[in-house]
Image 1: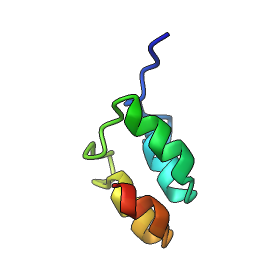
Image 2: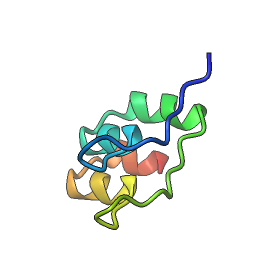
Image 3: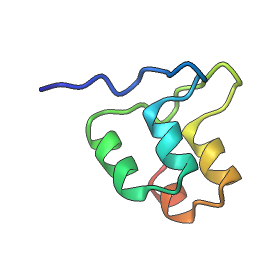
Image 4: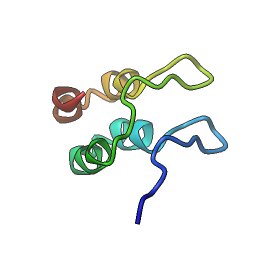
Length: 64
């Protein structure tokens, strides 16, 4: 089964952005292994890395 991992929710957040903002490194690894685009920009001009930085998610930043 192939899941689409680069969609946005109603808030403009991708699954990778949500995982990054929650410091969920395990989920970030899974999403990246399923080709989540770490460079995608949402309607606020932010990437998953921006959310990881704002959350001080060091383990996630190392993956991005």
